[in-house]
Amino acid sequence: MTDSVDAAQRYRDQIWKTLQLVGRPDSRFHWDFSSFIADFEENEVATANLVELDAWQSAEWVFITPDNSTELLRREAITAGKNILITTYGIKRGFMRLDPTSVPANDISYAATLDGLDRYGVPTTLAELRGSEPLPLLVTGGSAVSINGIRFGKGHGFFDLEWAMLSEIGLTNNASLVIDIVHDDQIVDEHLRGEPHDVPVDWIVSNRRTIRVPDVSREPGRVFWDLIPGGEHEFLPPIVELRAEREQLS
Amino acid sequence: MTTHPAAAYVQVTQELRDLVLAEPWQSSGVLPAEHVLVERFGVSRGTLRRATEELAREGLLLIERGRGTSIRRQAQLRAIMKDQLTAIALPDSRWHLDVLKFVPDFAGSELARERLFELPAYQAAETVFVAPDNSATGIIEHSLQQGQKVVVPTYALRRGMVLLDPATISSADFAFAATLDGLERFGETLTLESLKRLQHVDMLMTGAIAFTTSGVHVGNGQAYLDLEWGILATLGLVQSSTPIIGLAHDIQVVDIPLEPKPLDVTVNTITTPTKTLHTGSQPQRPSGISVKQLRQGQTDSVAYLSQLVIAPEGIVTT
Image 1 (cartoon, rainbow over the protein chains, first blue to last red):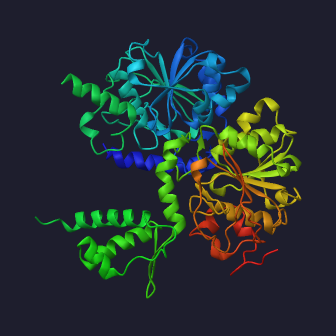
Image 2: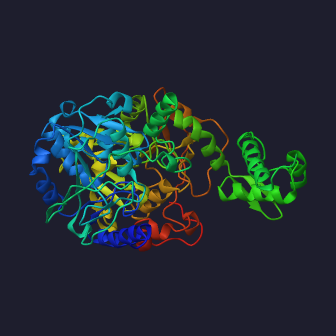
Image 3: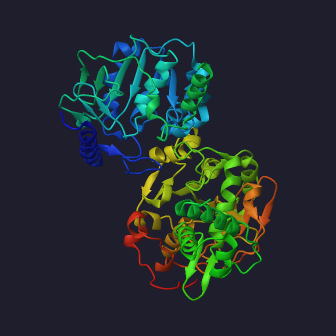
């Protein structure tokens, strides 16, 4: 097995070149695709593919990452009356809930953007989330994903951490499904082995394909506390919150 | 007890920064001689130099061989404002509370905007320029409601300016269109040619890190307002008489003797939640862009600049 860290960076580099062609710029980061997960050409086709899945249609609430590539899906979620759980960009201000009934019909597209999230979203702590129904579905974007469901984001491990934190408070279980929505050119036709903290996805949905990844084995998520001190996640509000809880227990 | 040299350098850098930030506005702004500071901080000359050079890299100090080290006053003000701004800022969707990366909105900004909307020049304007500041989002929305065409730069002017035309946007979408994310969807990218076809821009509106009561605009140090003015002026869309209005929280308006640099664009009026301040500034404004105002790399990163005639030296005023 090749060094997977190098491999990950190689795939990201390759995919960022692809994004120069099919990616859409961000309102702050423009074409700096290392700073955000880009929206892409024909996202409306990928989103239409995704909303056909039973996993989507049956979900009453869903975690969706704050990526530009999932903006259109958030619009679909609000329109369909699904409650959204989301993080703020980079998890810097923790989680937010977006209640579809709080969004006027005229502002659904607005509320689906990150700027709109700051207007219509409600910040929520992990303590407030604890005890909620487990999430039947989590949807993420990414820079690249292998055919066996190993994904790469911006290289900060945000989605893996989100999964881990939500798992720690009981918001995921064995029935929770994970979908990655990407441009077809972001799919790497190789089988890769993930890192222990990687969260393999059950479905890959693109503008051309809907792939059910076979035999996904996913450990129950947990925060790798030994990796937190001194790292970039150390002071993210939900991590601070979880750490305080742990310290109280011990 | 001995102190590790690296620790001494970090400490003296912090002490020197504190000294600089506390320097009165009325003083000369020149740091005491090196030997005085060496004695004061109790460190070696080498350690002091490292600290001085570090603050020069941050942009807070200007080292001129033979003339001593002086304080960059705009950077001083920016550094002082940073903490105060963080306390009142509403977070940005990407930058959160990193207030030197964007101009934040703040609680009560609607009162400042209401004052701005009362200005006769605003009411008479057909086409306005609004900086992509979060505090100005409400201005864009209101301008669209007034039927004004709105020219907005993309963030950091990276992808040029865009036009929001109320004739082509549903009024239900004005609030969305006024945000930076909405701009991506509703803004029509302006080439230099299409900018020129607008013929005139009647008013400019902007937020800031801070304004002085005399009208000096202190932004994030990249001088985007000056560049934006220069671009519009080069195309003949604005003249020195075109009003520039600042919008700010009261704590962002400071009464200090900060001289504008020769190519700085000053504002005529500042509105805050509690007051409308006419700065008395009736400036001669640049009629274009000079090489002197460009920061490192901006010719490549800022749209339009590679296509515009840029004056090598000072600038001709209109």
